[in-house]
Length: 544
Image (cartoon, rainbow, N blue to C red; front, top):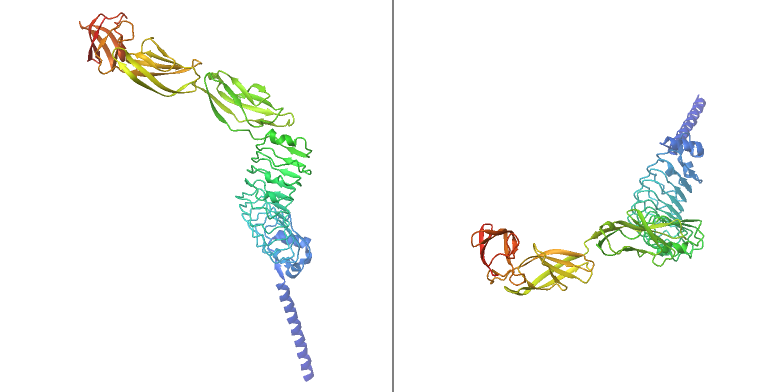
């Protein structure tokens, strides 16, 4: 019995040990697997990477020891949870999926290639430990920022275009960088690329940038994509002799860098800038595979051009002044008005109101037949041929008998000498003329003041010559300029009444009475009364 008992005890002990081993193995197996929540990710691993799967779960140890590339592109994956366990791979390709984030992969120290372009990423994990990384692709996502990159000193290619990046973290330490693709981002300022002197390909298109800082240092640059920006100057490229492709269309370039020293330059696209034949003709003899230069922006600025009546209307441009063989086609209101071989045209030497309109000129050159340059329009208006800027009258002498001596100071704008000056009394044609603007023996009264220039172009205004305060109300209407009239200065309905109380003349004052009756004959000698608005103004004596 004792022997049997010992045997049974030994059997129980071994059986318990077996159970313990089974339990231990099961616990260890459970600790080395993890569920993959994304069904597309899980199915991709089962199908393409069965060695890292234990059933439908990821074998963590197998994933950690997997030394080959992990290609998960075009798989419809939205959640890459589990990817962080592939810490021995040198390439991860998760491009063309629908993920919004990437799990922490900072322990994947051997990683050389990370392709995460064409997803829905809004942020990236910390990448600073991936110091072996050679290429990073995160284009076509929804990133508003990138993590720090300055520790990735091995990085050769960086693709981050077509995101929402307004700034780029410092890349000054990335001196091995050869390809930088950061176009189609709303950058407020591009980084200074001076430290990245090994760049051979640069994409900064559609960033709204006005400048590429450090461009002069990029003497190894072969391809520059900077289209659809606001860049006005690429002269820093002049010293570069290895450039093979320049895509700089849709900018504000008004000059070009030296391109004739770049023997390998094959692709040049510089349309939609502000270039002229002067800029482009030196390139017409070069053998490019692609040379896109047309159209260009319109030249000059639209101008409001007032032209004086009867004056010369001439149009001209200053652009391409040194270029020969240009043909200039002139237009008014979109209708052709002729061509010239020079950059100016006289429309008329005597402008009329019908010459007003919208004018422009187009320019062509036979050596660049695909290009027609258009100068912005002149909005021509025809204005008065002469303007009176200011004038002043002085009367150094004003006597009752001889009248006033008038000196005038006149400032004119737009006239052509010599000038003629006229004083015409209201309601008469008794014109006083002068070539200097000075007049003598001017009777008091209201006058039209007229100035005419050599083109018989002039201005009309009015002046008032007042009578001396001490003059007796006496007139001698005999046709000479001395004391032949009386100026009624008050405004209103005026009457001249003779000594018998009869009204001999009615006037609208201010007015000048020249001693005449209503029928135009001279009044008889005698005494008269001047009444304005039914109020007596003065007695006046007529002497014959």
